[in-house]
Length: 285
Image (cartoon, rainbow, N blue to C red; front, side, top):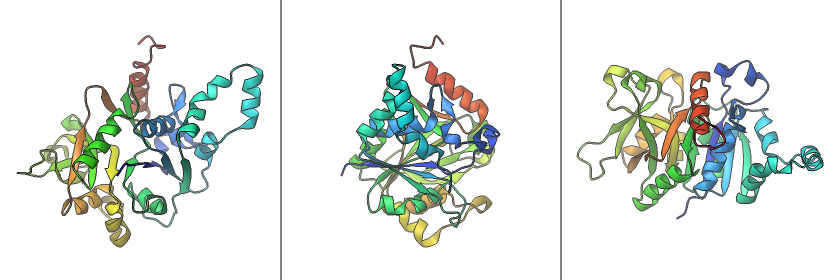
């Protein structure tokens, strides 16, 4: 069945970007001339997604306000003949059946798997795309890499597909690390993931880059066990490990036309800006 739903996480506080994010969500920090989260929504649309859910902090409405129509702005831009400045936002609304916003309850455990619990009513029993809000896919055609992941999920009847990219050994401790199953018919079958392993003992150099395609089966261990793991957090990796024990979980590496940039800190955010600028002929880089 086609995958039409995507869940984007935007519930973190982004303390590494203080003081600027004191006034708005970190996912609105721009990459070139657009907030990062807009690139994620456009990536999802490019992969055929029609229903997007953004999980945000309670009482934090800046993302919802950004995506909502603003008559005052439209009136002003019409007056100065610059209404085209909002075309990319209008295209999003024209492309989606729904764009919903769900606050992540403070009663949920802290961790990168909690947004799935918050959006369980949105997910229902359908497969879905899961996207970390501070990871950026750099590609000329938005959604190309995500489309490859969705195709792998459907073609192989997988329970999950996890995007990975090779990183230097000195950096693997920063990410979720892929552990591959030995003697499998699928060379990219996951046995599981280790969250932030020691550099010296990491079983591979494949880091998760914040893109997943999941069956709704991921909800079962989350809802039943709410497994609390390393540093007393609800880690997505722990629940992928439970799924991989009895279901097919695959990885998907990037092709040469796409790459991953993390944007969770100012230095990597700057690198992501440069990477995106190199794709745009307006910038001479």
